[in-house]
Length: 56
Image (cartoon, rainbow, N blue to C red; front, side):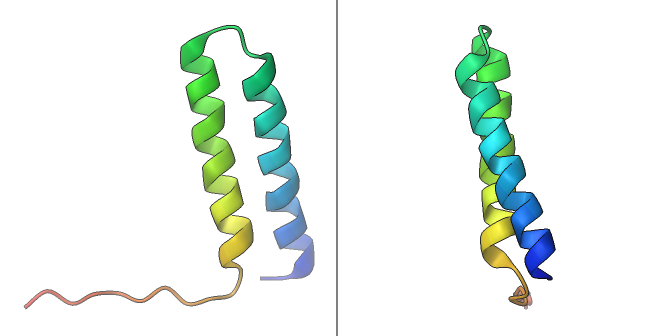
């Protein structure tokens, strides 16, 4: 993943954090926090390959 892409996901995480703080509805706050976590995870994972576990 390029540095540009990582920056994009980091920016989106920050935007979702702001939206969560300004949301009046608890369900909307929770949704924004879930999105924030997803964007943060995506920004931090970067180019690392995910390992797939095989089931026997």
